[in-house]
Image (cartoon, rainbow over all chains, first blue to last red; front, side):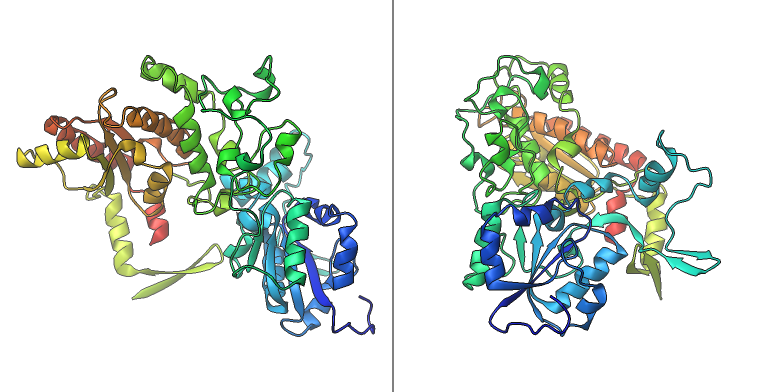
Length: 333
Length: 165
């Protein structure tokens, strides 16, 4: 919105913001195709850094609760992210955590297996392609001839949006599917939003929406995708030994990855009532892995079978580490 | 007296008294706190037998009776550790003896996978232990607890407990 232009009082006022995210959620807003015209018809967009040249100070100048709905994507990685989360919380009536990063930390949240020092070390010092003889790493403030230069603080760990401010609704997915976005916008426009704190997605798991045929699950061994020969094009991927997060993941994505013949990686976050997506998947996978011959297998055989799951943390907590029960790596002596 | 310490952007207040206990916990005085999930049909009866037979074992374990070791969701174990338990013992029937056919087979596999995850999270996997204890093995139960307490004394206090305080 340009300066001096008066706001249409009948229209809703939206804001979009990105914190620690890849920008995919911004594109996802456009994935709703022609329905974007309905959004524009129903709402004015006051703030959207990726598309509009509104400055932070313009938001600061707004009255509290001036924005009707703010869609906030991205996790909280820096003090700037946190500042904007708090600012937009004050200025918006409804704050929606948009996408896996805002809801549960997402891919940036995997950095919680390290800390600031380790992240800086890889990013600025030790990686083979880095040439940094002065060993420069980002500092919150630096003195130069012209004066003082400042940068936002890079936090030790990644936080989810709701660990920093109060969140009204969650729209999961990496990115949220066009259907979930348009359903959410419709609910906002028609004033039919569910109770505060709801996840704006169905209650069922991804398996419920998946096209593959499912039978009683028994896996002899887990396989990486390239290890599977003679894949059955109609059969559940998990039953064929490929780790698929479907059973532990909330649906609403219309099983888009599975429609493209790729296993679910869990971006929808935990299923309702589940505290910890990764632990649920550990439970589900371990109970069906090697079940056929469980009585014949020695402890060593079982350990070898499970050893093939090479990276439980990265596989089961790909999008939810900061929101899980133990949300970062602990340094035990 | 309260000392206010700024840590990771959060203000934490630590009682001097608590700090002293923390220091003490680093010493040999450290008493591990264990959560024990015991299956109704075998391990819990085994623990009962240890009690009625007056077998001595350390009082560090708080037992929770579950119908089957297969009922123990990995979340229970993670939650216990998050809430400061120094160790978690899961005890069920011997393989082949499960009252529900195969619950203990599943738990065995779950715990192997969970331990691998705990290792990645920087938590000593030996804080979690799965044992088979039958209803007649009161001695084995007592030995298991004694051994686990000794192991945990060597491992030291759960770092998550300090964080919680």
